[in-house]
Image (cartoon, rainbow, N blue to C red; front, side, top):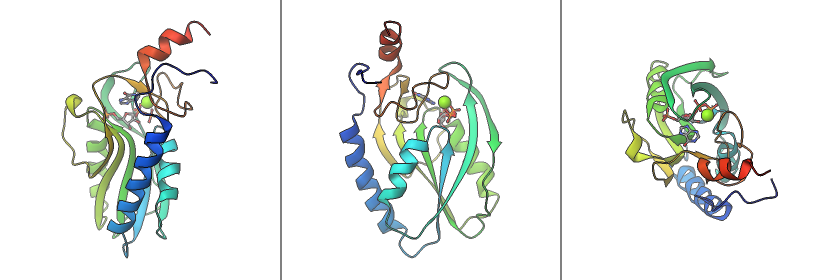
Length: 182
Ligand SMILES: O=P(O)(O)OC[C@H]1O[C@H](OP(=O)(O)OP(=O)(O)O)[C@H](O)[C@@H]1O
Ligand code: HPA
Ligand SMILES: [Mg+2]
């Protein structure tokens, strides 16, 4: 992990600066509301931890685990709910925290199932978005970075469950190339 895996798509410095801005914006937008920050695991864990600490509000935290990508780098097309929220969201202001909105299927699925529980508001904040890859178009309220159509890993995002702990974002083809040499 000491070694750089090629040129980062998003560096740690860029990430830090943008998350600070997002935290400030969310703190303003949700002042006086009953905010529940919901992390979509596993991918969002790193972004969630940094974003939560950039928000200056007395909010609640909760998590939901869903999965749709199997071993490869393509969506299975089916989103599976692996583990649900721990608390009720009825009447609360829910902000979903995603690492990435790619095809849009996961975000759409979550909006669909959580809307039924009657939150007062339900919005999405994603660190990354690939606008060119959408199969469906869920509304995304906060976006850290729009990125091109390439599979990326690091900062929570995986390929076959690995590379989530890289502290920055890199294209998968660069990791794969270098990984063989290690
Ligand atoms: O817009 P989409 O095409 O649906 O892709 C986005 C979703 O896919 C990834 O989850 P994944 O199923 O890989 O589970 P993980 O979070 O455990 O990696 C990612 O973390 C998002 O939740
Ligand atoms: O580019 C990606 N990388 C990792 N996980 C993902 N899930 C959707 N898109 C991606
Ligand atoms: Mg994944």
